[in-house]
Image 1 (cartoon, rainbow, N blue to C red):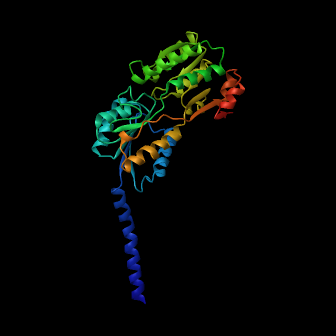
Image 2 (cartoon, rainbow, N blue to C red):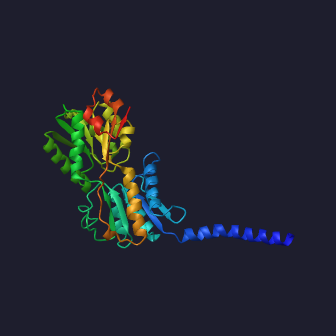
Length: 331
């Protein structure tokens, strides 16, 4: 009896010891994907988006740490680092490169490889930026989602004017004109202004050090409201504090800026978009789909958030039509 129990113990111990080895072997044979971003891993913003991306991968059957590994690369706002970060992911022979939140990330990835699949999610025009041949037929190793739509500029401006109908001039805070996506956004904004009968005052910024002078220039130029473009700069919350300082009603493209005290935001459902990237694009590519066969999508769900406290501070009354449209009202 003692010998039988001894054998059982040895068998159990041997099996238990084998489990970690099997798990490690499985993880070593699992696909590795690269996650490339121009900004930094802020827990309150990007942490939520990373979790949504992982959830999308899980929807497609891939769980990080179990049958998938992710190599994260953050440029911390230094666009000059993107080429080397992308090249490092290529050297590591990742199965897919996911490039988020600026055209710099997918462009760096595309220049680094013509064979590894690249999935982007950003606010530029991927056809004009040279990433894909067309939205319906990407035509290469690159595909993804874009939240650049010309209609979005008109919608956002219309929402701002609904809350601030007395504004006859609106300041548009944009990135530098030599940057392709900023140029497209400026043209779309001017067209929206003409359609709605308001003057658009374009003020460019090269980095976040220009914010203070830019907002002051708008106020001095007679702007009655401000529209923040979706350019990829760090420290965008500085604009919120400057708008409050100058008592300038503003609309923002990112929901996080209403949490920071911004008046209102209208933009894509970033959480849903991140999840879609994981489940529809990356998971399918890992299962054998080709990027060229996956059309570029544009989001269909948008969020309107209104900061009621900020509206009251600015002496604005939110009309019932905006309350009815709002996804969320911050008291």
